[in-house]
Length: 76
Length: 357
Image (tube, rainbow over all chains, first blue to last red; front, top):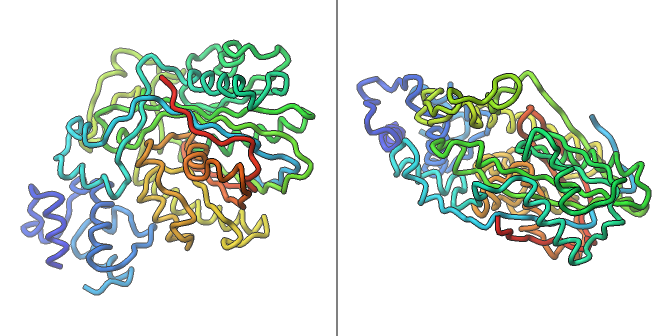
């Protein structure tokens, strides 16, 4: 989970992901942030995301991001 | 529509580029985002440099430049041309038609058929379909297909989602009858209910361009400044559309052609960006070596000219000297998505030109 927070902070240092308990409000991550995040995760966890999992609802909380990593074969 | 075109071939191809090449790094300051965040997209999306026309350039300029080159080099002769088809989203005028501008500028015969159609990134597949149908009535005359776009004029320079990937270019393709040509299997779909995923809201008969429509605003609240005269792309919707529809389309087209993925030497697709193509290749289980992904990083996404630029850049002289089994696919505004299997080879020429536009 720490790595996910690290990646999110790198993308949006101005947003306090920890205080928001991992909930990512609408509009914080745009589609290009999601693509950047997917690329970071794929390199870190050695997974390849199914393209159809790259949808905003899988990136609206740290928990949902962890779930989609697990779904695509990553260990977290 | 699913059909087989028989006895038709592509016998020559030109890519025509603008002179001006702009580096992604030099435009990063235009965008309303932290530079580091924007630069991260360079590797992921394939943003490196793109070709942009001068302000005075119109879409027909590329076509006239290319056709005059072909006529001067005798790659095609005027009396061999039976029809010209132009597919573009950026015509010079509402009237006259781009095909008639080319016809007049190049001094073609009065019995040459001129056709313009409006189609976005699926332009090449759409144009080939029309060219093949027109050839049924052309005998030994040739059809010249022009896919040309100057979309940089319709995208806001302050739109980080679209401007870095835009590239202006034209593809000029000579198509003719040949009884010995292998069958071409063609497959195309449309879904007009999703038409607003890619839209230029103003400038047509629905909403005329005005001072009001030219004002730059953060309309989507996403940090990108666009006017209603600019192209607006719903990136997430287009991504999901491509990843959902195109793999099914390719499998279906190959099945229709009774081919396997292993039978295909080259998958020559429209190239919106590197990330999308990699994900498509993964989904289709096609090796990256068989699906070139290098057009956006070299020229930008040339919209309707994307596949000809892809063929000229990646195959070039090889399709003059050899023959390859190819699967072409294009997808974009409409929404429209199509694919075809075709043998490319034995062309008379396949060259890239840099124009002074």
